[in-house]
Length: 333
Image 1 (cartoon, rainbow, N blue to C red):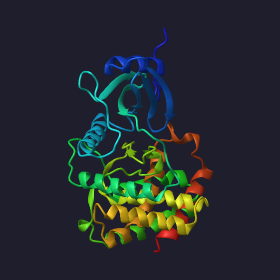
Image 2 (cartoon, rainbow, N blue to C red; image 1 turned 90 degrees about the horizontal axis):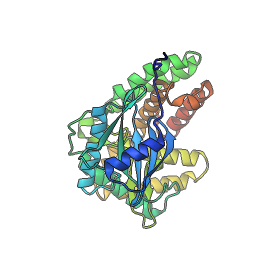
Image 3 (spheres, helix red, strand yellow; image 1 turned 45 degrees about the vertical axis):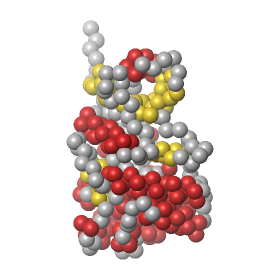
Image 4 (cartoon, helix red, strand yellow; image 1 turned 180 degrees about the vertical axis):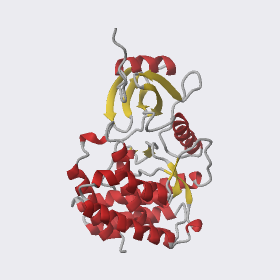
């Protein structure tokens, strides 16, 4: 008699998920289709009254308490007037669903569908909307304390630990690793030279790239995918949006001059709602080094379950080259 072989990452059936979610939430005429395998599995739920997004997490990526923290943060933002895709509550009053998968319990959340679409070439009006909305959300998250744990974006979390995680993957590329180590020392010195206690602090999205918000035909924004939300300097969110313009200008999709104009307009819009000191803006691009290392370390840690489709020796070398280009443009050391 065969027994179930140990499993580390299964895929739950779209058909059966659709039936389950329909019953749990009272949806009629439900269909479910697999959308994306990322750090979690994402499905689109369609029903008689519209759409929703179902995310199935991996235990190795997000604990139940961490998921509850994401749900709680979204509920606080939504109740405060933030334009976010919050978690939907089922007929029994629950936001988190649990499934017995081959590898163990996997938890899932159904989120409101964000109307509109991703935008990568922004109008001035959209940049003003984005700046105001980010600042509005930050005013809420800077005054929030969740009941559940979330990632803290400290120097240890964004620089020190990722360097250790990355090290075995760069064993054959000592020059690249030495560059990261030496740059890390200088960036940490730069960060520690500021009075961080005077900087805005709270829960940040930490992935404020255009892939994570939609604009509809009236330029109403909806922000989603708070999977990486955690406590840190709120400048982290402005920095991650700046990354969009780093990519956009580097790939020659927009001129450097126009990219700088766009980001300046975004900053001015943010400042109409929430203050930013000049020192915070000065430090902001240096936080980008930690952003690069954090996600590179995350890719290393999740190689077996997610990043193996693109993660290679060539990818590592290219990534370090991109970091060098970013630092050379934004962060004189």
